[in-house]
Length: 278
Image (cartoon, rainbow, N blue to C red; front, side):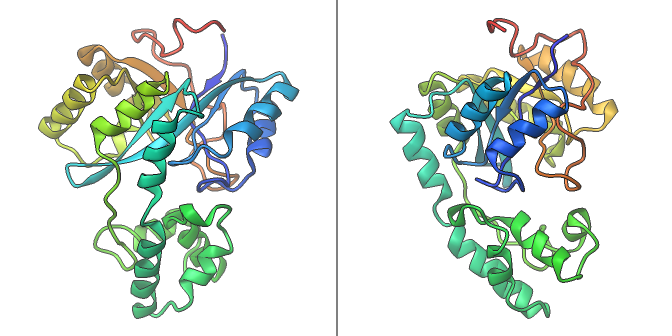
């Protein structure tokens, strides 16, 4: 059985390692088929593809698009995309816009809470300044000893109702799916168990996703608990969605699970790669 990991990040967005280093780690961890899915950014794909080819690792070009739906940030993964597609490139550029202003507002809130210079501190952890995010601020708060680790940061800062939280309007769900499909890709709802949706909201979101041309949902992911694997396997079946698998790896010591370390998909689902030539 192939070890397939279709969701992880490099320092081109909010990961720790370079795309080539993520490829090397994936290979070392026994991954056979791998996708780098940086947030709203395609610039790591060329390096990732080249590194994967050199390692004999089968590579899938991908991206993770930030979407605002129902007052929440929802992530849509695009797999098998053509990263040269102009509409996809323009859409992602527009989605990235506004991050710098948001980061300044986050820093101002942290300063008011007694943590000065957070913007400058976060920049030390940014590989791509256009993609400065909460994760970069979290790493700074760990560095200066405010919190023990990144998970501790998000329990006390940078989330709704806590110091440093500033919402952002991302892409619209139908637009994200359209950009992915227009680039020849497959649109997948990332880590659905993370969203604070009730049953009716989840149904509305998945219905809109399918109507827009969305095709899959992550079932086995580092963001899900073991019992959620079966929950979202049933959701995949109920909505006629293909199932995906990905660690959502961001870096050593930061992620819930290591690259390639997830269990297989449940037998009841149809994998997103069922018709790929692997």
